[in-house]
Image (cartoon, rainbow, N blue to C red; front, side):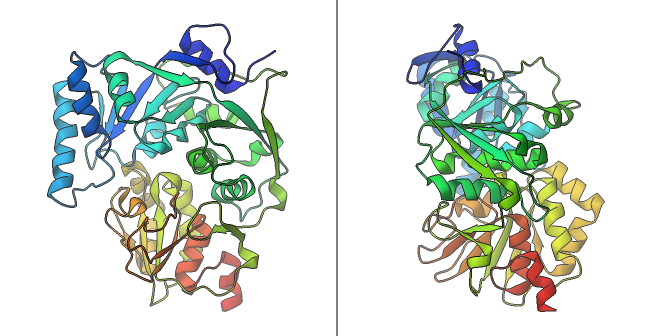
Length: 422
């Protein structure tokens, strides 16, 4: 019996010919990642182990959650990361102003690639599966062991095959695809399972679409999300990845525990209502829901394509007087590209606040906290109760096109509603 992509990558890194679902294995790591929230407690465990890091070129440390430092405690966390990076000469350390949000800059800078095995002390490490690698989030102790030994243990996950057919309509984004899937299978529908995306429909998905989809595998409970490497992938990594990589493809007789089919041609924009990413509704089934805030950005939708989509919607419009709109490019490069393309001017002229790259509002840290009773349409990844502020606030998850249109009309809306409103 053959193996699928996830199994092949895990087998290769375990140094064995074959693995199967449920098997416990120990693998060599290609990249170990942590941020200003998760790294400091891991450093304490690392110090108990003693010794140097396993490889200073295979570790990435990125302060992005509470940065630029919002208070004294966050400053101490960032200082801890900076000191560890300097002590161990960590090559891939990205200070504020020189990087951005971790899951945006690692692919952007070619640090992750096809066939790589990456762990990170952040649940959205699964983003890099968009490039045909295995990547997943881990806890404090596993990260510390990874820093010291370059090893991690895994239980080989079962795999769900997500078959994408048809062609993505112009008004649909990767966020709509993934929210549709989560709505179908639920937030625990892929619990400790791999989500392997396949089918002819993949051809109509951009790399930014794929990053968004893989990023939210965890919102379906997934261990990882993974895409096959195709021409789109190779074009993206051509001038980015400098190290050797290996492409893995699923065997024709690979085993899957389930298949889910989505016809992209049939999709319409969707919104995840409070307080679960799986509580999705089609935009056409939503009545008038007034809002107070819009956030466009995060590791899920802070890439240049997201900025373009939002700018195209906002151009020539003014944000509703009762709404504050916060736009956060995911990296310094995305910020610079947005400046050069004129997107930042469009955002400012529309009445939006543009922030330096940060995770900030996504986790309710800073740069967009909600008061009691307030509603926010956000391109972030989670809308749990109290996620972005007061426990009595509400977060509605959507793609950048819906977020931007909602900012203009002051209620949950899609771009076509702007024409109807004139």
